[in-house]
Length: 477
Image 1: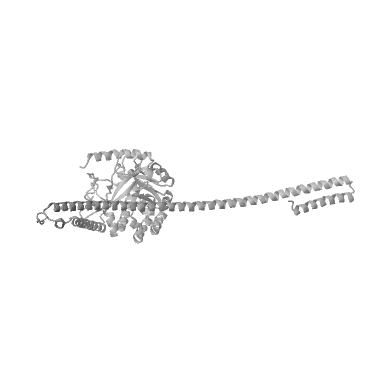
Image 2: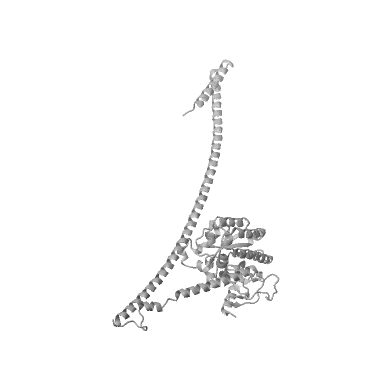
């Protein structure tokens, strides 16, 4: 519909052109035809001018509308991205809840299995008692009615008194022996911590297939008053129960940083993995001491990797999450070990600072994992790599496993095939190993020569596996 302003402008242009023609005809004395031509030309000029001006004004309006539309599209894109981020967070929480529920269901299944075993044992015991009762009743029926049971043929009640079950005494003796052993181990651990008898063993992590040493894992060993070595699995649980694991972790961190400084003198690209217990992460006082020490050595953060168990990351509380964030802000990276299944959320782990995941080679090569895990094991390395996480295959003990892991695109490996954990010679110790503790030179049941500095443990490419196999075939001695 034509606007009123447009009609008014058209009338004005017609009036202006007619007035111009009339003036030329009456004042200038120009003929009527020439005045009409001039008026028509003026009207045409006014129409063209109005059309051009309106076109320019419309172009300006369209440009502003396009700019507004672009800004609205950008705002819409940001809102869509925010909704996508929130949806991803909700999905990750759902996956975490599902994995936690699966763990609880697995625990319930295990408890049901144990109850089933106890029920079977109880059924077997009841069956034995019923057989004994039937035998006694048969003997009583066969005897003469006038005969009384003599001392040589005791009745059912007497038999029960003559054969007391020895199981409670044996169980009590076993519990007493176990309690005594735990008390001895606790005393040995406490003495080792007080007297600083904590040793660091290093096991290399090599690249595959080159088998070049890239990292070392620090393995903790304690020595008792007789210089007998206690492995980590023998004292970790007892130390956590007694509240000593925090002091042990703090001392181990100090030793690991010292070892890392010695290693970086020869190789700037080397790194050290240091295990940290879940109780150390949750204890605010102990963690504060460790954080102060790590903050003072943040220059080594790119080469110093803190390692936690898979269960620790799956059961993080508010304080543990805050402590991990504090470590990540200082540049430290994390690793996950003691992996029992392949259900991971790479994006969430990468956001928390995880850069390495250790999976046993047997778990990666287990055909059952194809149906129980969310992803095929052969695709796990690529999936983790998209989020900056390196997959490490640990506990490798055979060349066949190495070949199969190469098909899974695993780039880092660890295990006795490459090298066992070896003790670190204290700085300033004599080269002949005279100051090494008793039992420190014996690894995996075989006597070893005095060990060199940590940086000299690097095995030549492709020769480590054959050397380990030769030592294993030679046996002890």
